[in-house]
Amino acid sequence: MFWYFGYGSNMDLKSLRAKGVDPRISQRAVLHGWRLRFNVAHFFRHEGGVGNIEASGDLSDVVQGVLHLCEDEHLALLDAAEACGHGYDHIEVTVRHDAGERSAIAYAGLPAFIDNTCLPTRRYLNILLQGATAAGLDCAYIEALRKHPVQPRRAAPPFVPPPGDYPSFNAATLARQPLLTALAGCVFDMADARSQHRFLQSFFGGKDMTLFHLKRLDHSDGSETLEDLRCDRLTLAQRQYLDEYLHAYMEEYAYAGRFLYD
Image 1: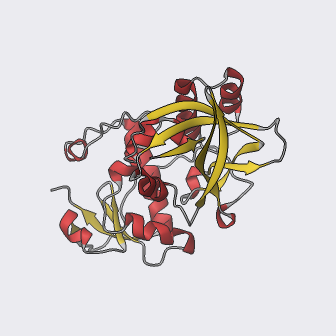
Image 2: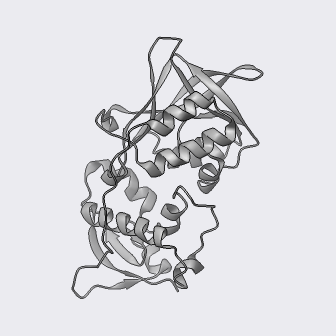
Image 3: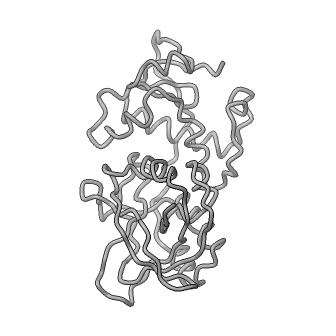
């Protein structure tokens, strides 16, 4: 087992469990001499910047978060979720919790993904607020998170696939195409994506990512299923969120066909 310090969306247990990580223990903790930033550029531009920590050398600077005791097999899941070696890397930190001090791993942004002009989205901040509140972090810290500037939300119209004669895929045929990925009934080709998306080629390739995205909504309870898609049981907010991502996929990748939920 290992201790992991989450300071961003992984403070929230629902968000962490959506990534397949269910800690044995979770407790509030503080990291001194570091600052919270939102300067790791998300893979998709409409998502703005996500959490990062930077050493300041000033012990009065603090990052509050949640210390999780995780199973060894959870490390690979966390590494995948955090794009370890691509967008983030492991660091070892010493955090203070209610019973003393403990060493833990945390994730810090890598230079290639740092953009100090980024702002977080309201969706992302809401997840942080849920996790911080549930963990009992200091009220002043929570209030500072609540008041943090956010990236304006870009309105996205319903996504309409481009005209043309495109093939159809199901889970079995998509799995044989490592550079294709699916979202909300559409298939996209990632072969010519910009270099920052090389990690996603291996993470998304051959898979339908619809539930992956839906479970990262700030109001997700983790119960979303493919049956909800087949039976068109999505809420308006879920449809709007998927439309935002469909337009983002279209900007980054090439439309390649339809995905059938057999």
